[in-house]
Image (cartoon, rainbow, N blue to C red; front, side):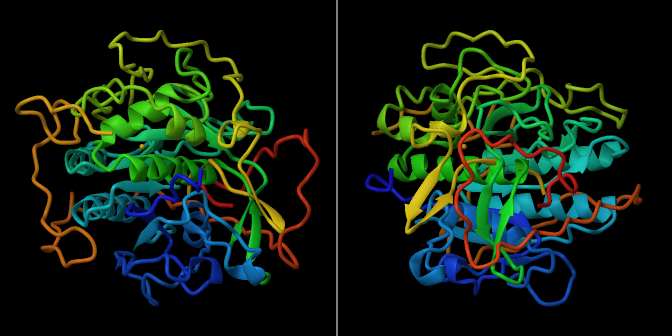
Length: 436
């Protein structure tokens, strides 16, 4: 794939705990970002370590360990980090997230990655409405928003936002067998999936490298897949990029609540993308977000069962909620995971919490958005120029609980260990919703 494109020309906004930009595998990859966290240290410090790993999975160059370090799936991408306080109380956390989503879109980020989230239960209507406004704003600006669906699939499986919000592409995690991992949450919010076990990445731990698992990683790899495709087709809209990812996924005609339309397959999307379809139609069915917070029914949430809109215009039927869903990891390079061999085998493909010329747009359509999204005009210049100040979306609401702390990342001593044998059972469980 890298002989065709590495994602050059695409900026991915990583809304997370910050990015330690001086790690060898990220040097030169990180743009001057924004710090909305209210914490000390600035955007290039990462007290949690989560944002650094996610950024590496997207855009790592492998420069560490004498050129044998951690590669991202799209090493030509630039990362625009937006730091929020991932350990803040719920009201502060979601208010910062909403501001970050809108800011990323206003700064011209093609792709917005949210490898994190918050339980939808207990959110106020104002908080949900604020998130919806931010997501609508991002879509109308032409951005594609990916989010991890969460890691409580085997311990409650309650709906998380932003993955459950209409206009967001929820990403589940798959194991070596191509099935959803036990921890990966399932439901109608799942649109796509990507590898989410045995992911090796740069981190802030003692050795500088960590082995991770979860839907945070899957979301990062889905974002990187979109970046590769968009780099090759810069005239496409966010809707067209997402539609091709869906139509080239492992099982696009048989949606599952566990893997969505299947695992993203960037190699297939790059070589045989097919018709990207209309520029102004969002390819996932939309439904109104819940007007008030109620305990969600397991497997349902803020979206109707996702329906892809194939180039032909026909609607594939939603599939059963089996834990299958076609082959997954081997889909990116055609095998069972995305492995980059550079003296060391490095897995780099798709997963977890913490989208030729394009057809002429329909007259009066919102560029890059979906029906009903507020029409906005992008600020001129994009990266790296300065943009007008962003107005915050929503006001802080009363706290409803503490955001679960991120877990500890297990360090990989001495660099990357040998790749586990094929067939190793996928990891399950996980420390908390989106952390390693």
